[in-house]
Image (cartoon, rainbow, N blue to C red; front, top):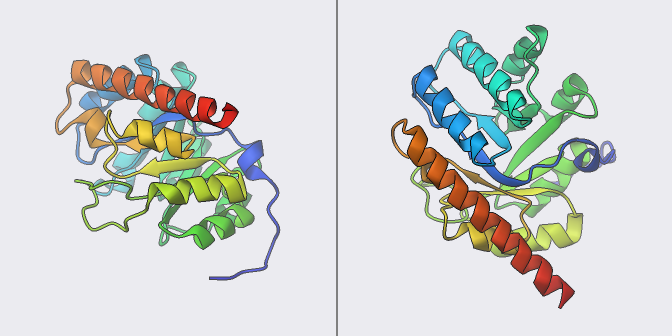
Length: 240
């Protein structure tokens, strides 16, 4: 993959930086249960939420998006819309502007999204196990890149396998925010932080298989604490 068009404007430094635990919403949940569990995660210290929904209509996703934007902003967090620039635009027009969008390989053009969101909009790019895709994504206007799957994943059992060493390599070479994803739980999240990721994306280990706000709160607390521990270990290692 190669592309010489358009140098990076440093959107990885202009836009807000994903840090800590990055919650990704599960598919198919009723709105009330989803909002209750997202609120529990936010109360436990999660600041980044991605609304991912592969099943519902555009009208329903708009409704869910409105509720999630209001909730995350109340907790001074960030709501990222998965896949759909159209939903992003519609939410913004309605006064419920999300912080940004996350795009996979088939989900649209990063440059188009950058024009639509402006310099402070957050744009994430799924880069799977591909360092060169990460470099080009940043060049085209992404503000962070995501690698995974890092560990065996229930959500994406056939996803590309990305080694933790890819995170370390990319941090060193590109110095951009990196989100690790795929099979992350309260134990291995420490390794993700130690590898250099600024954030760890979680679905099942945070939300479980059905809405349970109390369980989500406990899981979020443990994930937040363990990721922070991994960051401290990494920083101490660098100082040493």
